[in-house]
Image (cartoon, rainbow, N blue to C red; front, side):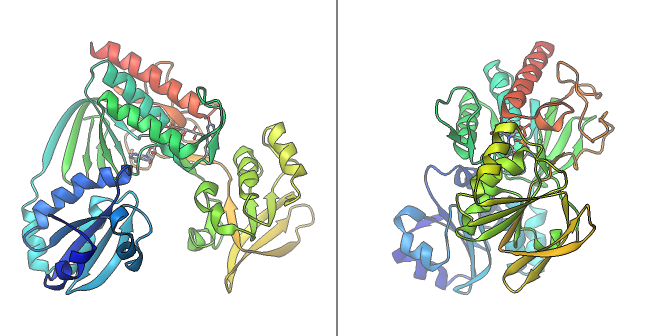
Length: 422
Ligand SMILES: Cc1cc2nc3c(=O)[nH]c(=O)nc-3n(C[C@H](O)[C@H](O)[C@H](O)COP(=O)(O)OP(=O)(O)OC[C@H]3O[C@@H](n4cnc5c(N)ncnc54)[C@H](O)[C@@H]3O)c2cc1C
């Protein structure tokens, strides 16, 4: 693997059949997470592919020329030409591998695959999910000298990473940006001594044997498991929702509100998240139409008042969306008036859906006791119905889901579990 700069770039790619180039930066957590995966792949594919790294901050013009807008960004070249998709953000090993495999002859791919040596790692505790609950459990466990690994299918931080500002987490006088709070929690956990596997593929989760497979090549075996996989936005399951997800239909204001500067948006929902996020979106959008099924908002009173007094926000009470469509570069919401049953159409630039959350439990097929909404039942020490399996945070059955309640769960589980281990 070689480090190059802009002046070496043209020569570096011209003679080689296949090149993979990593534009990295410093102080970049996803770049740090990527580095060991890039290194491991270079050992595996190095005989057939040239692995190059380039420091983005010192080579900005080249980065712009190649369409790189964030770090890390991985670009593939064949015979001197850019090929495939640029990978960026929390890049997975499998995403790089898939693109390389497509560029190489089948026989060579087979040869490379046959060289993959499965790895087994043993740990005392395996935490699945690196949001506030999992990170807090990790801090307590590492400080109690318990060998702990956290795995996350994305970058650590959880839902907080995509929250604009947090004003109710103690210790910060002024509101703190969600991504910064996530960053502080993650760095604290790393410093405490927890090992991370981030932006990975997780498969074959066996809660009885307490093992799972990471990136199709590392089996992690644990004495105890903590499930901390949190929750994700719920879909409304109407025609057009899946089709236009990420192409006009969004579930994250922090991620996407900036694209609606001086534009019109429709928000579906009227609970806490919908109302609070509408306030944030109104900093960008010129007009917001909120579609809510009930005759009043269901968020906290203070947020309701702010939304009702915001001149940019208009609320359609007792209405429900029936379909999302596209008309040229505009989105269209088919909406039903629940009182009159009349269907009308609203043309808009973008749609945000905030209709609640669902627990992230797709990977767990073992028989865990759940509540009627599909959240894991845990006792007051965060133990589940399966021996040596704990669950914490938004994924468990409870009344209030907040950062403070998630970190409290993580604390309780780790203290209870440390006592059991010692
Ligand atoms: C828009 C928004 C605004 C919010 N604002 C606030 C606020 O101001 N104050 C407040 O206190 N709370 C707020 N919350 C709620 C708060 O973010 C959550 O209660 C908290 O993040 C829950 O933490 P958690 O660790 O349980 O789960 P999460 O934060 O959901 O983290 C779960 C982690 O598990 C990972 N994961 C998922 N599936 C798997 C898998 N199969 N394998 C491995 N890893 C997996 C995810 O990638 C994620 O990193 C907000 C939530 C949202 C959506």
